[in-house]
Amino acid sequence: MNSLVSDTLPAITADRITIRGGKPLTGRVDVRGAKNLATKAMVAALLGDTPSLLQDVPTISDVDIVTRMLEAYGVAVSKPASGELLLDPANVERAHFEQIDVLAGSSRIPILFCGPLLHRLGEALIPDLGGCRIGDRPIDFHMDALRAFGAIVDKSYEGIRITAPNGLKGANIELPYPSVGATEQVLLTAVRAEGVTELKNAAIEPEIMDLIAVLQKMGAIISIEPNRVIFIEGVDRLEGYTHRAIFDRNEAASWASAALATKGDIFVAGAKQQELMTFLNVFRKVGGRFDIHEDGIRFYHPGGALKPVQVETDVHPGFMTDWQQPLIVALTQAEGVSTVHETVYENRFGFTDALVEMGADIVVHKEGLESITRRVPRRKLEQAAVITGPTPLHGADVRVPDLRGGFSYLIAALTAEGTSTITNLGIINRGYEHFTDKLAGLGADFSIEA
Ligand code: EPZ
Image (cartoon, rainbow, N blue to C red):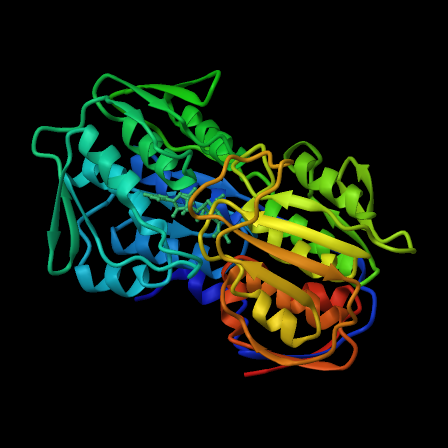
């Protein structure tokens, strides 16, 4: 298959990086549009009658995968300028299952094609999904929501086949948990369904608000009510959009943690205060400093000892699950005992084994820990990591397990004295644009090999 974007993806063809650590990272990095919005906005383009233009699209492999999926469905994708994608859905058609299957194995985004494909083609076929191995990651909320709209979900030997012989009708849906993906599923389906949809217990992450902004530009009628309720009035037709993606909060928080752990000073251009408030509070409690500027945020280690913190991951506006892995590396350098409770995924501390190998003192409690100061109600998924510091880190040979865990290994290797080798680097390229160039710009000492 010939994909324009994949052809121009500046490949991290290297699979292995050797880092000589112990040097503060200093300088500037530019953060572009969020992976977790850009890929969804690309899917939304399928719903329009006219082309859509998405701006500030990061050059990452998840965008590449969604590009190739859209192309498999006949969407013409071009790149009019750096960071821009023009998505023309004029000739949408059924894709060959083999094309979709090959692409889907490495991403979770295909599940979000259901609503738009049902509207355009009357059926959707979803193969086995990929994405980071951080727990079970079921799709029951998605399938239940689609059934509520009137879709019929059948398991076939190829995957899940979803049809809507009588069209899709607005529905009353209450999610068991404010799932980001399931909220997006409902939005992308309800905008063109007949009648009104009421979604209760919706996710309200900034990337969801940005997706709603995209859909509103396309002609959708969506109102956000108090207490996680969203109303969507279905419309007959949607147009293409022009939209600049919201900045990547996860990448910004990752570089901030890198500044803290390496005793560095990084200006993260493109980062904004509003969407990072919860992260900034924790960053400050740990002893990091930040200066907010019009065009970005400077994150730095002011010298002296870092302080331990108690953190619980949560849905927005809580502390994001994607922020805990990079932060934990910085917490290995804090004086005292920190606790991080993971309440979103059931298996997101696997990466800490490698940090322990590098000298960190981290104990994972699989059933969580009781404490009276808990803010998030206990979920049966939860685990706790207890980090005792400060511990000097030393170099090791480690393999990237998942996207955020992988970035935390980079930070740990940069913090450690000595040399580390990190393999399976391609996973980091799923969500961190040009990360080796950015590391070089921050003065990191490393070499890469294929
Ligand atoms: C999105 O995943 C992000 N991925 C994740 O980013 C992020 O960690 C997560 O939201 C939480 O913010 C993308 O946007 C592509 P969920 P998503 O549905 O939508 C359970 C990264 O590194 N659940 O909110 O898959 C699920 O198992 C990543 O960029 C069900 O039980 O997250 C989990 O425990 C990784 N049934 C919880 O809900 C379902 O049908 C939250 O998942 C769906 C979800």
